[in-house]
Image 1 (tube, rainbow, N blue to C red):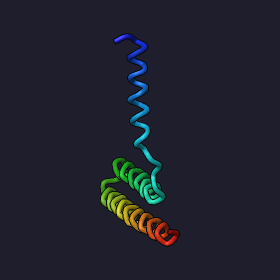
Image 2 (image 1 turned 120 degrees about the horizontal axis):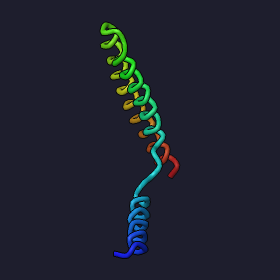
Image 3 (image 1 turned 90 degrees about the horizontal axis):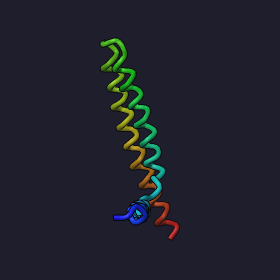
Length: 86
């Protein structure tokens, strides 16, 4: 395949892949923020005193669960608000 044809084929594939993407929901953004905080706690646990590690890891697990619960509540609220608007 000629270089120009290769570039055009790659551009077409990238363009097609980009069409399927969508913006994250508000709930996904909240869950992502909680996930980042949980990751930071786990990193802190990795370098902390062994006695503190389980406490930090449990805190990370709680943050992840809270983020998932908030995501679900926010996404359900958006769906309900959309239904009411119609």
